[in-house]
Image (cartoon, rainbow, N blue to C red):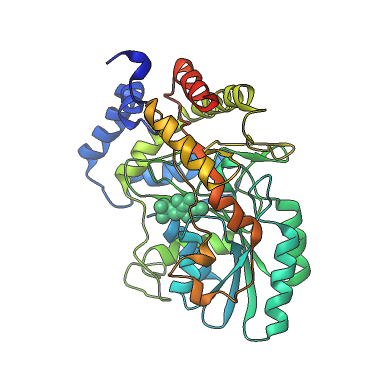
Length: 377
Ligand SMILES: *Cc1c(COP(=O)(O)O)cnc(C)c1O
């Protein structure tokens, strides 16, 4: 096949592995030698590295981004009768966890330009819940969507005024920054995911919780290991098996050395897309005084027909694309019965015409230009 038609990868983990080379193998070999597969020394080493990177006091490595959310909500005692406010335009895990704990997710609309949770809609939704009088408002989950930060200053002000716990679901955006600071310390607790397609991805499931609160950090450590106390067979509370594997920590330690370079490469690709596509499609709005980890580069088309036509044109040119998210969460079968029926027009509209283009550190300049050319048609 001619190189100009060779299919472009949406995510190229094999090429990434080649680039990481012996550093990665060495890290894995060390674990194979010491055989401490559960809570081995790499877990603590990674926790220290991640806390330092994000500029926070504590990091607790856990089994996934979903379990990170669950541990944080368990620590707050969130459960039956509680309302947890979260964006309707996000990955399912954000909404699933409150339901698993018996609480109710209350869906909030997002901003049409940045796609992040909309503070005006958030205030309205909190008022809706207070007025209905059935649920107790307990927590706000700000999601840093697609690599960019949520509007943290506004979210903190609302959380404080309303007396609500504030959590940052940063699964997609570790490495991004807000107001000049790396994400990780904007809320009381921040949760990360190391699913392979996230900006800092492992080779399996993994996650972490960041916080500046020593008491909460200790609680998270206890909850991740069956609610244990100072000794293994002292059970203080109902917990879970939520530990991060040593092998995943080893992989992540090897990858962390290349993380800043990867973020810079993602940003360079985003800038090439911006330059080549603005004026043709709606390119992603930047959140002021922030940087994106560019988990997703999403454009907006006019409507679903145009999106379908563009997707087909890209496909014919060997360019993959993806739809995040084809349905707002309040319309998903699993969640719609928990929704109060309020319209969330921006989330509903975005899901009909948003489209994600390939963006990963292995993407070549020539491939980026091919994507641009195929899109411009
Ligand atoms: C990926 C993701 C999660 C869940 O992370 P896992 O590690 O896959 O459990 C949670 N929230 C958001 C916004 C995500 O994108």
